[in-house]
Length: 99
Image 1 (spheres, rainbow, N blue to C red):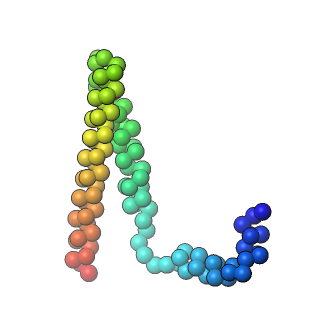
Image 2 (cartoon, rainbow, N blue to C red):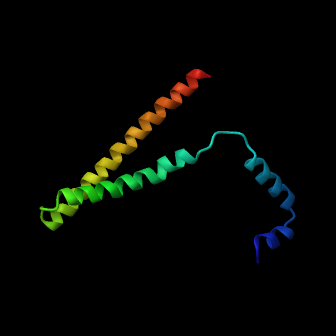
Image 3 (cartoon, helix red, strand yellow):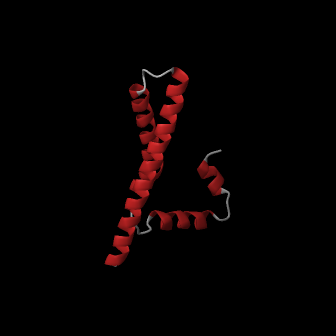
C-alpha cells in the first residue's frame, strides 16, 4: 500500500494536505546551518580529533593510547560544542537588539 492509497481512503486527507502546504510555505529562516552545527559538526570534530590524537600518541602503549585519545577527543568535542553555543548565543542576542 502506497502513501497515496492510504490518503485516498482517509476522511481527513484535505486537512493534511492543507497543513503540509502551509508548513512548506511558512516564512522563516532556514535551519539547515543550525542542524549541521548541532549534529554533523560534533561528529566530524570527534572523528578528526580521535584520529589526530591516535597519531600523536602512536608511541604510547595500546590500551593507554586508546583511552587517552578517547578522553582528549571527547574533551575537544565538548569544547567545540560550547564555543559554537557561545557564538550562536552572541549572534542571537545581536539579532534581537537590531529588531
